[in-house]
Image (tube, rainbow, N blue to C red; front, side, top):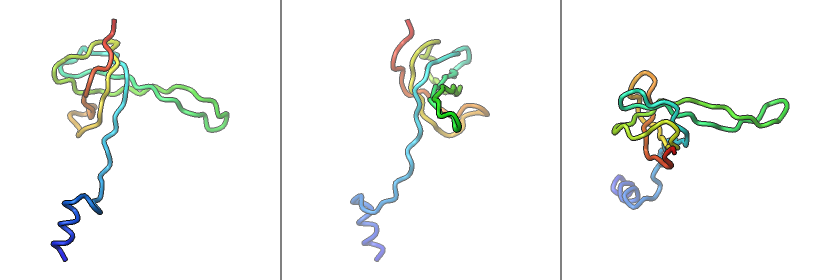
Length: 99
């Protein structure tokens, strides 16, 4: 019985899939820290009563290992394990450099 379960798991059948890590697109608003940057992520939210959409901004601290990102860059960040008190994201790629 155990061997059948292991065989089906190795073939990719009936394998529980864990959730994917969240990723966000945002602009770098600060790069003054060493190996870290602050990324502002905008999202549209609907007002519960008036049904009007408005923008909310969330600031995320992201780990930037090579200090590549600069202010104004459009970047992609992904969640990871907590790296410090406020830093639990890491920089994946720079999509567009600031002019």
